[in-house]
Amino acid sequence: MSDPMDMRPEFEGLVAVVTGAASGIGLATALELARRGATVAAADLNTTGVPEPLHAYECDVSDGPGVTRTVERIARELGGIDVLVNNAGIGAQGTVADNDDQEWLRVLDVNVVGIARMSAAALPHLRRSRAAAIVNTASIAALVGLPRRAAYSASKGAVLALTRAMAADHVGEGIRVNCVSPGTADTPWVQRLLARTDDPAGELARLSARQPTGRLVTADEVAQAIAYLASPRSGSVTGISLSVDGGMAGFQLPS
Ligand code: NAI
Image (cartoon, rainbow, N blue to C red; front, side, top):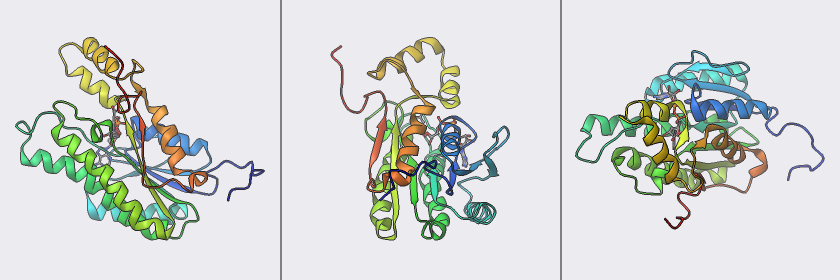
């Protein structure tokens, strides 16, 4: 049990690895964990612009040998791994009639197998930690059927199921595994999507109205949820999905 008089930052002395940490939710999470006292490895395809005090590591979660090399390097250079945030992900638009096999395999490879690769490489280090936690980034798309998101939704549904299975596998080793399920969040990803539409302002209004709060989720709001799940203070929380979606998965307002 934590000591109520302990005033040290909650992640002090812990090393966290965040994937997809150069942008959006990953960057906000890496900064929040650092603010709460963690030493943070920011792993991304491209780490240009990753700010201090984050430690930047170039890593493609779809490259098995590269993942193993990077995880070993992080553990060696930063002194172990206590927290792993599997956040890197890519999108895909369309129905099952629109995506070819190659796109399906690419989305599943990054969004699902990427989590398995990173987690498997980190497990030996997590097993040695006094406060081991994995947090995966799922999505509202895992919980609610959204139009024209077939492959992406399938990948995020798999992230949710994988989270629960991993929680069962590793609870006996003292490793907690949870996920966050964000609604549409105001990140560079969504800005890119909007820029590709004929009517970005109209599309933004439609996406905002879809969430009962009437606005997009912020990256920082998702980061707060990830930090809660990763925290040593959340020792009894494992196998859950925490929605950060402005109420979208939970209820509907009368129209
Ligand atoms: P973003 O596009 O702003 O950031 C994603 C980061 O992941 C980028 O820096 C990118 O370089 C990195 N990345 C992509 N593929 C990679 C790979 N193979 N290896 C390593 N890094 C890789 O996106 P955002 O919005 O911050 O999304 C982060 C996560 O949140 C994703 O898993 C996404 O599916 C999920 N999410 C996002 C929502 C949104 O509305 N923005 C809603 C629900 C979930």
